[in-house]
Image 1 (cartoon, rainbow, N blue to C red):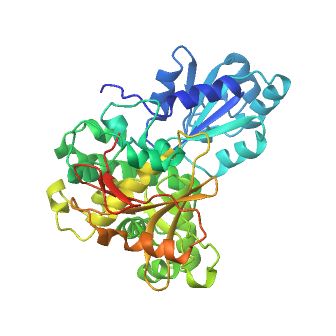
Image 2: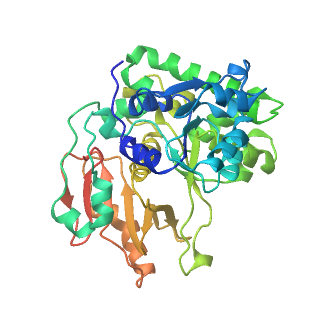
Length: 411
């Protein structure tokens, strides 16, 4: 499998040049080890195991570090938590940058401990699945999101080009965005996603929690995949499965901690009582969602009731990935009034708001702007940038004097 350059590579290198410890976290199989192998060629790397005490690191962490001098990559650090305190002591002796790069696939336990123990000594970088530019092997220093946030008026006046033609929308959603899934034949993707889910439950979840009914937890994962791009109702989740609301919250937190789920909080503004306060949740990978929903091939997404939600999930995830390259990423919200008006995604940075609608339709129209117009009407004093409708259209187009639509596969 050919290596595809990652858009966060340069940011990662700059972090290592400035900080003693860099922690790269992300879901299993998103390419953390491969990224580090290519970004830091020549560095020694040690991969830890949940069963075997590699190099006696857990038993004697100081001796392990004596035998593995910096610069050093410590892969899957959650399996050797004893090393964190030993690393802290060494970093305190010398704050020289570029000593250790740690990776992990869990936000809880070890990574939480690392963030506390290494406060002021380490920086963190989250790695997600491929973005569209990485898939197309068209990574550059800039991307459309940076241009839009820096100067939305210039972005609208001079829109960027599309990425080179690749997979169809349905195939990309069905295939998902994990690096390994990108190169597999379609006939084998089902096996890949089933194996991924099994490995995820057996290795990650079992280390995090004492789930008593694994079949029920598997049904929970299937249920939340079906609810991607919807507001989160913990009571509903519990009722559907016959578990308590507390259990549903705990399990969803577990999915978040292992990078399988993320959420966009509701935007309140100055009219809190009129606005929904529930966050909107998304499964991290659409390919895994399709597998969990037993969607057998890409063509079956045509007319499928989940197609629009999966497309929105992919677009929001894409924006998260592009945001990760920015020195100051925007905050992500969604907005909905009790009257039913809504905006799928509302970015916030530097006191300005950037409304984005996501539509699975190749012919955007003024009717797609209802949510954005309602937002402008509700918050007339808010600094709102020109809004976007992101959809699988072939070209950039203005929908009115302020808002425009553009292809989801924009460079």
